[in-house]
Structure formats: C-alpha cells, structure tokens
Length: 180
Image (cartoon, rainbow, N blue to C red):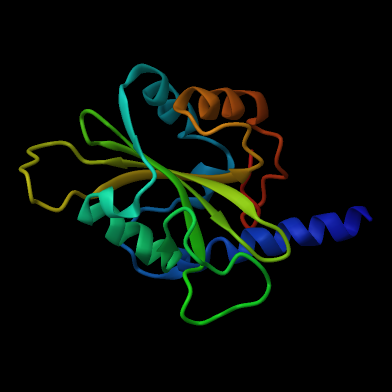
C-alpha cells in the first residue's frame, strides 16, 4: 500500500511540472525549491505585505499570465471545464485556477491552482519579480520561484501561511515530488 501511495505522489509530481523543462525564462532552481531555501523569504513577504486576491485568470498581468501558461500550459477559471481526471480531452485546459494574488508593490505573485489525474491536487506557485526601474507596460523578469503542492485548508493568504508553516518539510524532498 505504501508503495502505491509513493507511486501516486511521484506521478502527481511529474504531471504537475509539465512546462518546467521548457524555456519559460523562469529561474527554476529545483534544489532551492526542494530544500525550501527561498520559502522563508516568501512566507515573510506573504505575512508582511498587503495582497489583492482574484479568482479570474483574466485579471493576471500579461507578464504573469504568459509565465503561468508557459509553465502549466492552459488554465481554466474556477467552474470552467478542464481536464480534472485521467480522461484527457485535448481542447480543455490542464489546470484550474483557485486564486491569484499580488502584493501592492507588484513584485510578489501567488498562484494557487489544481491539476487532475488520479486525484485532484492543489499547487502553490510563488514568484518574485524584479522591481528595479520598473515602468508600467515593461515586461518584468522573474527573479525567484517556489512551487509546492498539498491539501490546503483554506484559500486566504493567512490560511496559506499557516499551512506552509505547519507542513513545511513534511514532503519526501526529491525533485519529482516537491510538497510541504
């Protein structure tokens, strides 16, 4: 039974990272993510900054939406049809947005989304964008990223921070299965 559960997590980790081998111009450092080397920075910013939350992918700035689509392929808004199970339909998105949040400085972005397969899993992507010399309309570069997945108990910034603090380090910690 334990072997089956481990294989399910391994398959989930692999299928949730579809775009990570593409050149999405995002510095994904798997070792930093697996070891949570950059997670404390993101948690600190989540606790200290003010955020605007949206549940509409069309509210994402174009430079974030492009990055997310490069990494994850297509994404449905909540309630829209998507490939939520093993039955794959080619014209449907592969993930569903849960929420999108941005801080007032527009340099920290949180994207929570679901992927399907044998089970539905929620993922959290945290992005830090360069904020030096930013001009409206100029494309920002992603400086850092952290990605994980788990079974979240709420969808507010406070709930996410509590969940991360409680569960940080509870994953196996290999490159194909990054969760906390």
